[in-house]
Length: 247
Image 1 (cartoon, one colour):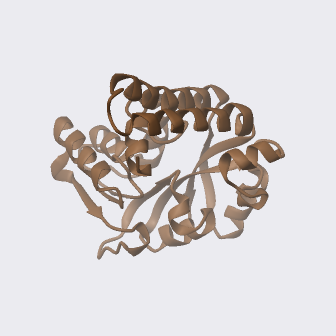
Image 2 (cartoon, rainbow, N blue to C red):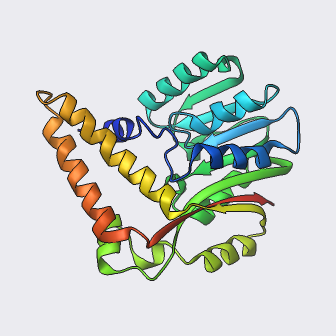
């Protein structure tokens, strides 16, 4: 079972691919779009378009563009947009986020949980700046260390110690690159637990419902591995912060 299929099945009940509740997503989007009634949003790594379709639903005069390498996720994004009646205001591009270009700048550029596409947080912000209109905002979501990571936490994440920093250092680095945080949200442990139990539970439920599927055993293995890496590894160690920034 390929990684994209696993992710699609695991996010069946939690379409926002980050440890953030729908209520927190709505609050973040409200802050990010309040500066203009008619704007343009770009999501570099949009997945199934959860952030963009919510923004378009709340802001009827906004337009949005999503970029992602997962063709199946983009199909789901298009279907969701059609169901909500916002498909005419949403453009979707099946390509690498770092290769996307546009003639017009954007009032809001997003990258939530997909900074790996650019090689980390600061390169992501540098790429976002290239697409940003004067006075525009960037919303970026990334990990940070809530506490010093143990070997089990690093192994569970497949990460190195220097891949993330603590929240203060992360924020300092962002500011040093010329950005000003105008809002920020740190996901709670409850949000993390909800996300991880939903991830493992949705994939496990699919495997139980499709016992004869050739990928059922691989799905169960992925569930068991992910659950162990989380509960015995990085739970309470890896945090997630979503920053709203002006350049």
